[in-house]
Structure formats: structure tokens, C-alpha cells
Length: 490
Ligand code: AMP
Ligand code: MG
Image 1 (cartoon, protein in one colour):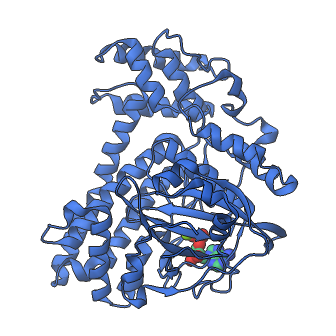
Image 2 (cartoon, rainbow, N blue to C red):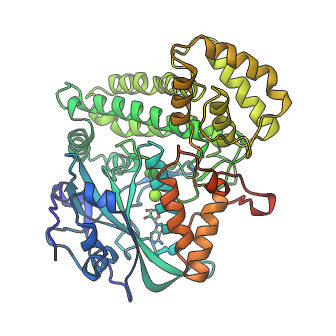
Image 3 (tube, rainbow, N blue to C red):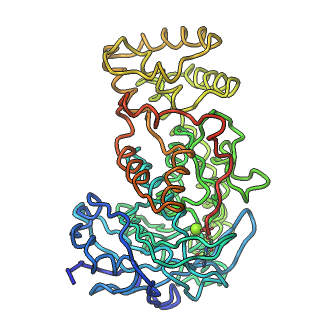
């Protein structure tokens, strides 16, 4: 057994934060994929992780020295209704390691068997859901977004019972921490102010150490999380990413994207778009995401009230002021992100309208969101880079807008070639399109063929570099390939 330098700070918190629980061994652990670069960043030997011993650990069949496995407890608002007791029902935190970047990371197994928080669930994960999370979370990382990551996926040799029997798998997930808004809600609901105070300190120390010196730590934390989420959700919007299940237990204090269940990237632009099979009211539709984030942050503020100020009225005033800043912070981050996508390094007053008009043209023509922005970058200069003109060209209705955009672009500093390079770096060409993800999952689940999965993961690691030989992966689905719904995969 190779050494992994675990240092488990969450497991050192009081017992009421978690339950000690070992993963439940699986019948036949089989390696699917190990993320070599991430393993190295975590100070782990990728070769060892690929060995039978490493695979056994990743399946939950063997425990690495220093690991102190726990299931953490939390609550949360799911689709707007409060559930006082959730928790890691099918995930076990093996422990934490300090990466070569000096940052502390959680190593968690997802699909590792039941825990005291399983609420009747089997604690397992179907292979398809594990591969989806692997593909999309790693794509998000390559796109430059804060996100949980996939260290490895292993098969279990067991079946899980869902609508039908499906092969099971375990994902080794890595996050700066798995502490959620729902973690705070759990203790607030119990009026456990001591736990709230401990949790505030813990999260500040891990994610926002510069705020530890603030007089009001709880307020500093709230402000930090509001900023982090404003910039995160702005990034989602700028990529056409729909999270799909923005419950308060699925929002991390670290500001990383978590829970790749029913998520998807849009193909044709439609602000009302929803993919999740269980989101009947469209609560988590694309255009609602900033508003829902705001709502969730208000829930965090509410949970923090007892530690924001001893006087309740003053606590409410502090919380309200902090939460009220979210819309502006989001707008700023979003405007800056969209300006970058349009090649505008020095954004001005009229740019908001320019963006809005472009988006309404896209919506009117149901144009492919990703390719339209990428094609704009082609138009920014007569550069030599291979463009996506074979895959997408603007309809004539865009010509007046394109003319105005070119005029605006000409006022920007730098050469056309530099502007174009910046736009290529802001507008990906390869995203985890739903039909490609589905194709990779089908091959693995139905034919035990992991080649499409591996191809997709490799390709999505370079999302900003177009290669004409990979054009198939940049294209939107043909009508018969279109995936309209994604399933929660629980
Ligand atoms: P999610 O929808 O994935 O955010 O999960 C919501 C809650 O249900 C979390 O507390 C999960 O741990 C729990 N859960 C989801 N799937 C399972 C399962 N198969 N077995 C036990 N608990 C589960
Ligand atoms: Mg969740």
C-alpha cells in the first residue's frame, strides 16, 4: 500500500458533523479510468492508483493508511422545499490531502454504499451517471470553471436497481471541500450556534483565509461566498451550461460547481431551456439560474443569522445588505464575461445592448450557442486558424448586427490577430454536448466499450483548440440525435 498523506480536518470537527462509516466493498472492482494529471497534482502515484491495490481503494474495498472515512450530514432546500435531514447518502469522504499546489482537497467516493443518511436508498451509483459526471466535471475544469473533479472511475461488477437493472460504478470525486449551503442549514435548524461558529471558521480557513482576520467572520464568509457564486453562475451563463438541480445542498461554499446529475450544455440557444426530467416547473431553467443562486444565498444568509450579530435586527440588516449585492455582482461578472466573448477588452456602456441583441438573434434563430460565439471569433480577423465556417455560418438576419459589432471591435486596443486569439481563448469549440455524452454512456453501458468515453474525455481537455479532423465533436446533434431530457441518475 503506497502512502497517501491524508490530513483529515473535517473528521476532527465534533462528532455531530458526520458519521464514521466504511465504504461497502463491491464484488469485482474494475478500473475504468484514472486521471493522471489530477493524481499527480494530489501527490498520488497514478500508476499505483491503476494497480489492483489502487483499484481496490477506489472501489472502497481497501482502506489507505491515514484515511478516516466519514459521511457528512447536511440539510437543504430541494426544488424549494426544505428537507431537514439529507447528508452523504451514497458518498463517503475518505479524507483530505494537501495538493502540490498547497491546497487542501477532499477525496470522496460516490456510489460507495449506504450510510446513516441513505434514507432508504442503496448508496450506489449507476455507471452512466458516474461517466457523465467524469466527462462533464473534467470538461468544466478544462473550460476554466471552478468545479469538483474526477480522480477515477471504477466499475463494481454489481447491478443497481433503478427503472431497470444497470451496471454499478464508483466515482472518486475531488473538491476543495464538500461543505454546502445545506450544511449550514442543518445546524441553523437545530439552533446549534456553536456548530455554526466552528463551520464558519473551518470554511474561512480552507477557502478564504484572508478573511480570517475580519472582525465579523460570518459576514466575511457570506460576502465571499456571494462573490464566488456570482462569478461562478456568470461563467455558467456564458457557456450555455444548465446545472439542472440547484438545490441548496448542491451549492458549495468553496464556489465550485457540484452535482453533475441532470446538467447539460445547450445546443440551440433557448433561455427557457430545461433538461432535467424531474424539473417540471422549469425552476432551474437556464435563465432562472442567477435568480435561483440569489435565492440560495439568501438561505445561506438566513442560516448564518445567529452568528452574524447577537442582535437579531442587526443580524438581519447585515444579511440583507450582503445578499442584496448579489444581482450587481452577478451582472458585472456576466457583462465582463460576455464582453470577453465578443472580443471587447475595454467594455463600454453600449455593450450590454450589443450582447442582448446578439442573444435575441441567437434565440430567434435557435442558433447553436457555442458555434455562434466561436464563429464570431473567426470573423474577428482574417487569421490563418482553421475556422468553423463549415459547421456554422450566420444567417443574413445577423448582418446588421455583425456590422455594428465590427465597428465596435475596431475601437478596441490591439491588432485584429490578437483580438482573435483572445476570442478563441474565451469561446470554446468543444463542449460536452449531450448527444456525445449519451453516445459515450450507451457504448459503455450497453457494449462495455469505453473507447467513446475515453475519446471524449481526452478531446474535452483541449476545448479551445479546433481541429477539423474532430469536426464531428464540434457539431450540434442532428434532429434524431437530440437528447431532450437528462435523468437525475440517482
Ligand atoms: P442529489 O439529488 O444527488 O443531490 O441527492 C440528494 C440526496 O439524496 C443526497 O443526500 C444524496 O446523498 C441522496 N441520495 C441520492 N441518491 C442516493 C442513493 N442511491 N442512495 C442513497 N442516497 C442517495
Ligand atoms: Mg447532491
